[in-house]
Structures are given as structure tokens and as C-alpha cells.
Length: 240
Length: 246
Image 1 (cartoon, rainbow over the protein chains, first blue to last red):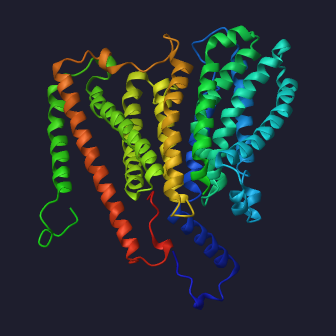
Image 2 (spheres, chains in turn brown, yellow):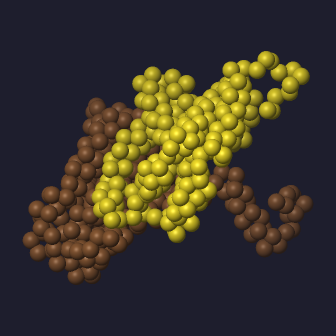
Image 3 (cartoon, each protein chain N blue to C red):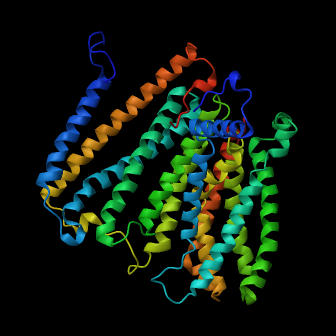
């Protein structure tokens, strides 16, 4: 607001501070480079949490199972997205992106490599998180461990494929860390709903047969196929 | 509107399109407000007329996002700036119509359902659609390299649209698979649309379609002018350019 010219060189501590604050606020007001993605991010998170609300009209499955499943997958998603944001970070920091692009490998191979590395990261997070949830929330999985691992694998493939592709895009913007979840969370909703529904069934003590009959595996598979195909086909446009 | 009538060239096709669009909006208002009968009070009575805004806007939003998808593919294949411009413009106009859907819905729902919002399948997937294309516009406005923004945005335009059916299906399944659950009353069936109501609906749909075509053409033209200004470097520092989203 106030023009801080050279005549104001003797301004006091508070005036200088206020000028700096004003500068930051003006900058933000002009570009909305942080605020706009932040607001959209909040809406996306609120929407994600809605999917872990127990269904008021569906009795039979403990409400807690659904909420815990929601907690679990929200945690995995956020942790994954924080990790994906670093997908191309080392190449960028060392200015090695060009050398990477020069590697004698098809761009889709590059995509598979980056996605595979991210998959290992997400799987490691889950390997820590699930036992932790078992301890904290008294999960009684019994023989369903294998089923949960299968669900997690199907979820991870789609999640990692889409996350890797979008992180390459978000990395080329001014608000990288903020834009990745803004782009990824809405797109990941099918994976998330399927993951919550399937693991809530497991936590509620349903067997693998009930899961297979529910059809959510079909949603996961369809998403995995689309995400991998689009990722492999368009990664070059995201990078170049 | 902004041009000087004394010196401007004869009205272009764009101008005529605008005139036709607004004229049809004015015409459609007659059946919407006066011809269509008042709905059952349980469906909102007079307030049910918001339906004639709400549903056409939703159809137009779908149309716009479909255009984003096709133009994005065309741009990735041909690299012709025209397709990028069309995709960007359609996304902007589509978000406007999608916002209209999300605003008019709760206005009707509050008195009829007793709540502004329900986590119903159709509401949730519309909100997701809106988020997806707001993300698309944010990506465009925040990209560091303007030369590459088109390709990046096109990737999101493709993913966003391919994701829509899966999103729709999964969200639908999540809540609407139980008939006793909260679900949007299907307005076409529940309100018993007769000939007067259908007239109002299709008049409104035509008006919205023309309005959309005009806004899209206008936005594409603004984009062309922006390109021209830039190529003639009439603008100083890049920072002076207005970000695309604003």
C-alpha cells in the first residue's frame, strides 16, 4: 500500500517489518500462487475424508472399520505424495535431468523406472504402517494378511503410476509440493474408495470371498490399467 | 461491448453469436418462469425452477470437459497452438458452468432435503469433476515454462477425462448401490415433467448451448489476441502478463 521510497530509509524496525509483510501479501494477492492451490487442496482433502465416513444406511459392518481403513489409506496417500514430489528432485538439483533424458531408453522405460522406485517407497511405508495400525487400533486380521497385501499391491500400482506422472508435471510449476496433491487427490478417488471399502471389509472380519464378490477389484484393475497406459504414453510430454 | 461503435468494423460472426445467445437466454426465461408449472411443494415448489438452470449447466460442463479431452489429444498429436487454445478455453468455461451446477444444487437442496450438501454419488462426482479442472487451470497458471505448459496441461486434460468414468462409477457404487440410501431425486421423473416443463427445459438447454459456444469463441479469440500481443512484444516484462487463471 504505502510506497517505501528511499526517503524512508530511517524507518523503524516495525515499519520495515510491516513493509516486508506487505510485500509478501501483495505478491500473494497478485499471483495467488500459494493460496489458490492451498484452498483447492483443502477441498480435496475434505472430500477424501468423506469417503471414510461410515455409511449411515448400511448396517452390519462396524463403523469403526471403515473409519480406520480411511485413516490408513489417507496416511498412505499423503506419505506417498510427499515422496513422489521428490521423484525428479535429485536430477533437478544436480542439473542431471538432461543426462537422464539422454539415457538410451524409451521414455516409457523412464516412466517405469521412476514408478518402480516410488512403488518400493510406498510399499515400505505400508510395511511400517499396517503393523502400527494393528498395534494402535486393535486390528484382528487373522488369516487376511495375504488378502490385505494383495489389495495394497493393486492400490499401489495405480497410485504410483498416476502419482509419478503427475509429479513430473507438478515439478515444473512454481508451487510444486502444493500442486501435486491438488492434481492427484481428485484423480485418485477411485483407488481410494476401493482401498477403503476392501480393507474395511477385511478389518470387519469378512473373508476373501466376500471381497472378491464385491467387485471393487474390478475398479482397482481398471484404474491400474488406465493409469499405467496413460503414464507410459504421456510421460515424455510431461518431461520434455 | 467494449468496442467503439463509431470506428468498429461491421459486426462479426462472433458478435452475432453473442446476440443470438443472449436473445435465446431471454426467450428461454419465458417458458422457464411462466410456462412450466409450479412443482410439488415437496420438490421445492417455485424453487424447483432452478432445475432449468442446474441440469443444462451440468450437461454443458460435461460437453466442455469432453472438448478439453479431444482438443488435448489433438494438441499432443499435432502441436498446433489452436488446439491448445481451444482446450484451455473450454476448461475455463467448463469450470464456470460446473461452478454454476455446484452453486444452484445446494440452493435447491437446502429447503427440500434440509441440508446443503449430501455425500451422494452424483454430488460427490460433480465436486470431483470441478476439482480436476480447477487443478488443470492451476497447473496452467503456475507452470514455470510457458512454452511447455500446453503439453503438460494436455496430459492432465487426458488423464482427467479418462478418470471421469472410473470416478463416476466408483463413487456411484460407494453410495448409490443401496436404494434406501440418500440419493438425488431424479428430477425428470419425480417432478413429472409434462410438455410445458419439457419446453422450458429444452429452451434453456438451447440457450445454454449457444451461450457456451459464444463464451468459448470469445475466450479463444482473447487467447489469439494475447498471442498476437506477445509476438509483437507490446508487453514488457513477462511478470506483467496477467496469469491465465485470473
